[in-house]
Image (cartoon, rainbow, N blue to C red; front, side):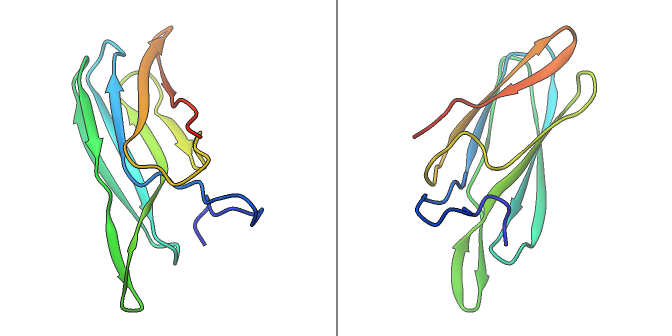
Length: 119
C-alpha cells in the first residue's frame, strides 16, 4: 500500500495529488515527482524549472480493477544545486490536496524545499 496511507483510521488520507513548485533558489533546477497508486506501482516524472519560475505536476490517474484511481505524489527530488534533496510523503497536509505548494530556496549553496501545512 502507498506510504502515505493513514495508520490511524480516524484520520483522513494525507495524499497530495498535484503540486506546484516555486523556484527562488538562484539556479535552474530539475524537479522530479514520484507517483504511486494503491497497488504500490510507481512512476517518476521530471521537469526543469528556471530560477524565478514555477512548474506544475498534474494529477495522474490509472485504471485498477476496472476503476479509475488517482495516483498520489509519494516523493519529490530536487537536483541542480549541491547534493540532490529528497522528501517523501506524507507532506504537510491533513486531507487530500490538489495543487499543493512547494517552495524551493537556497541556503549556503544547498537547496531547501519547504511545503506549508494545509489543514
